[in-house]
Image 1 (cartoon, rainbow, N blue to C red):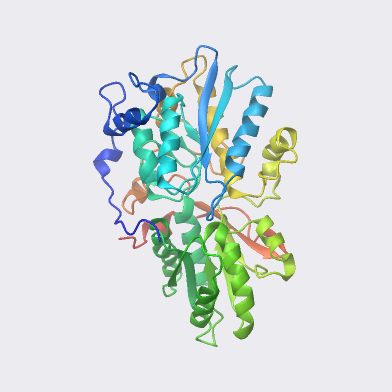
Image 2 (tube, helix red, strand yellow):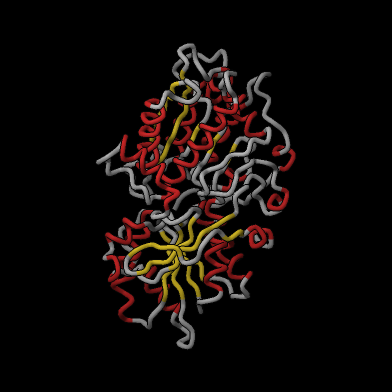
Length: 437
């Protein structure tokens, strides 16, 4: 297991002030400077930006080639986006340079990525995935570098004044799924990673179950890099089939290892009464369903909550055009992957921020200043209009930066992931009433 166990502490006064960038360096920046090979007279992320050659530098990071969750499509798509936007003349005539970094699902590597962003003068970190915000966020905050469109798997992404999430992350996915399952399930078992991030999942799922008058889920911890989940599958089946009068639901939320769990689950379920499965986007996508047997696989009939419309929705066509033109044949990039989709939306945000600055300087300061100044960003209907105000409704439960609490509900039918109902569902009230203490 990793990093046991931290109680959430939200320091609201810190959330209500901007970092002091023009004055003395903060502790995070001093640590970053001490770690860089180059000298540190001025923090590059704070004063750099457009550059003398008219370029704007950003970074995208994600884990790759690890035994746990991997998101290689996110940096790969970021590079494809840069090629595409530069072929269109850049953003307001400025060439976009994208740096990529492998976070390796490791706290040291995540911190190293952040230090590199500072060293190379990135004006933002865009469309990235990391479980280790405790490691990278202080460095970004110290340098004043905004974090735009993270994947939403850490509490810091919804508390840091320099985080600008485009979705509601794990909080809304689990709360939305719980609310759906409350109406259709008997006993519910949640299988989740035995990590600090995993510790946050049960109360979120339970908040949705409670909103529907359902009992809490059974919380089962599992190693996030296991090669088999036979015992966890049988334990979940025993829990959810204990009452033969009610059809239980098994909810694996293990990221990339969800497929491994489902292999074990498929072998074990023949010995038990029928149960339903459900999960969240990011733990399953269309490629996962295809690889597991499609309509004859274990996901058939499963509910899946997501942040965005289904992958077949026409609103994704502009993103697919970029992939077709700049990354055709790159099997790292899957248009149905929630990480790739989040990266597209994050760069859509960044593009509109730079455009809003006109001919002015593009720096970490001006980018975050535009976002804090009330800029409204549209995403072609993939999300509601985004605006990053302090969210007092959700501050009380620890999510003051969560500005998009919408979820979509999808279902696996005939081996395809399709919309189970039209439009978005707002789970703000469910989260507001959650017991996350």
